[in-house]
Image (cartoon, rainbow, N blue to C red; front, side):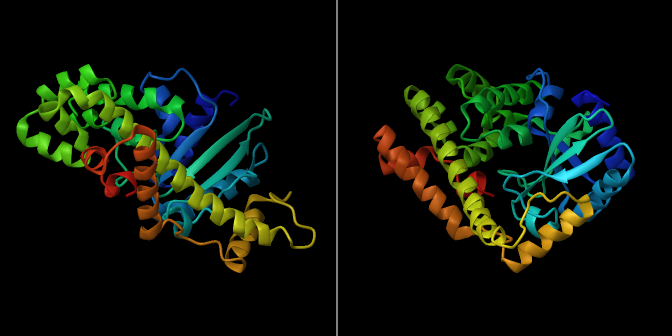
Length: 310
């Protein structure tokens, strides 16, 4: 079980055996869809109500003779519905019998995702539209995947693929092939699509501004969780003999982190409506500064808050 792919097969089987509802997403999903060659880490969206089963599975794997499980030493919350169901992530390392380390990130409520939607041909894999939405980060390297997934979705007959396209000519051509009734719904999620009919010469600039807004909003979102973790961790690490992750079983680690989160009040849902609105305001202000965009122009371009930060 050395290769990432063989480990994924194994772990998917164990998730099914434990009756855990999940979807493999991000880089490994891109590998599945043929738009990325390889990646070592894996990202999993787990139904929040099944996170207790996931912890039980990880404890079971940790107690097996040929495997160990540990939290990783980065910003991450307890693996529970209270936290992951509110946007936090849990970061775990599984070391197999060959001493190969596999890094797994678990989501309950994944960034920019409203519904856990899977590939019609493989229910273990997040849909192209879902993965594209998750890939709208502040990292430039993610955006080619956003566009590629959008194009694939259109080929598969899913008109929502146009919500992720970045190439102006492709957007125009694709838009013209979508029935007018459906266009209204799509434009409500991606307002700049209206430029295709009304102001096509401004579409290229609109795409650039929209992407910038997504990137700023994602940075703001991450900072909310990062700051909450830092404030919690700053108090926790003052304890005598502090060590994290501690050299102990995964079950002990889970209990220690849960107790510390309760004791030092790690907020379960730091990204409240006020924080979302601040992120949106910040993104619009930065876009105005960088692109000399007017308020009216930004209103025509910016995705609604329910799409940016559902």
